[in-house]
Length: 237
Image 1 (cartoon, rainbow, N blue to C red):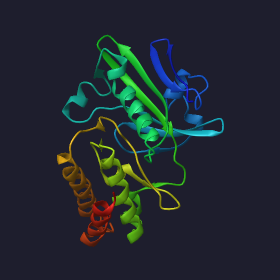
Image 2: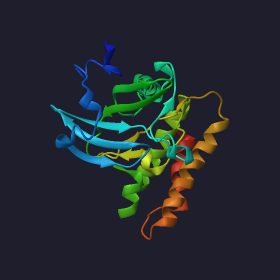
Image 3: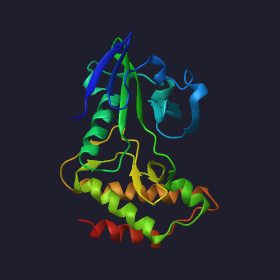
Image 4: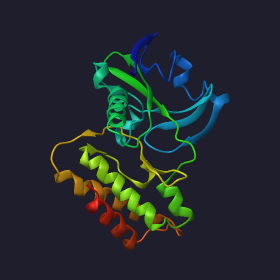
């Protein structure tokens, strides 16, 4: 049975999986502090770096705001209770989805530093080796029908479990060496009742694909690809 603990390191509160992280350290939550062990970075919601910790490689993301408010509160969020912070909620959601057998990274640790009514947050997850985003793949080559089918089937699996991904786009879909599909970046996501939202969730992905295509001379996405994805989504039960 997995063991989870909460520890306080100075001003930092840490929720972690003791099977994956024996003892949390403040430096684990700083790309700058771990710079000698950093193996790469990634774009997305927040600042993300990958670094080695012993025999493991982890993905560390620092939560950053978007939009105009980011000019005032770049990485600060309002919140009084730990369980309601973005890092805590995403860590728990990932844990719940793993229990359902959904293809997402393992949550390692969530970190929250409180300052009055505001907080800053970080999340460490398992690094998924030998993967690339769907968007990166499509810049360099056409995806086979099997990949589009698997993407459609995978999204349907999440929807069947009522998982709403608030930012379902081509950059948050990872493809492995054996063409297995993962979804990542579940900030502000969660379980949602009903079915009305599922179609718009799919269309969000299609808009992201079309937007990337409009910005690149070589982006291999077509209506035929989308039809294959959609058919697989509709037939997956």
